[in-house]
Length: 229
Image 1: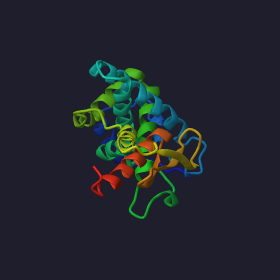
Image 2 (image 1 turned 60 degrees about the vertical axis):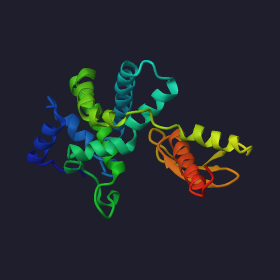
Image 3 (image 1 turned 180 degrees about the horizontal axis):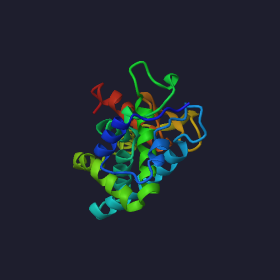
């Protein structure tokens, strides 16, 4: 069962978030992990928050990089809305201090990045419900700004790089296969294997595309490390 959130911790978090909730019940729901035995956990908010984040970032990318291709924009978007980025932002604003989760859902070292990322998306939905899209946009643009600054260029398309590598050597094209899929329909995790004539690699991702990109990167790294540039 959920427990009341410490008032001081809640105040500290909203101060770092930069948003004061008119209806704090939205925030209280956003930090209830699905491992708790409650009906109003944060899964539905996480589902919507993911879409709110994607919309705001996609719109901003179109404005910032209007001359880039759809592929470059998609790779920028994928990196900015990734679970890794969401978890990093959750840590920056001390979201873990107010998340409520069953002990079994925690890792041996504390709050997992997956729980943090899910809660981060749920908080964005909570802001959206409480203050509207513009309030959510302001929060997103404030906390995602440092991650924009890191993107001097669009992230590398590892699948294309791997394909070019094999084609230059007259080898068959890389073969990708989903070998596992877990998690609920709105938040699946894919495990993909890629095979080439020289190597193979396995990777997991929030989407099939993400898993394929990670697997391709690892496979290419294996082959180039052998001196086969």
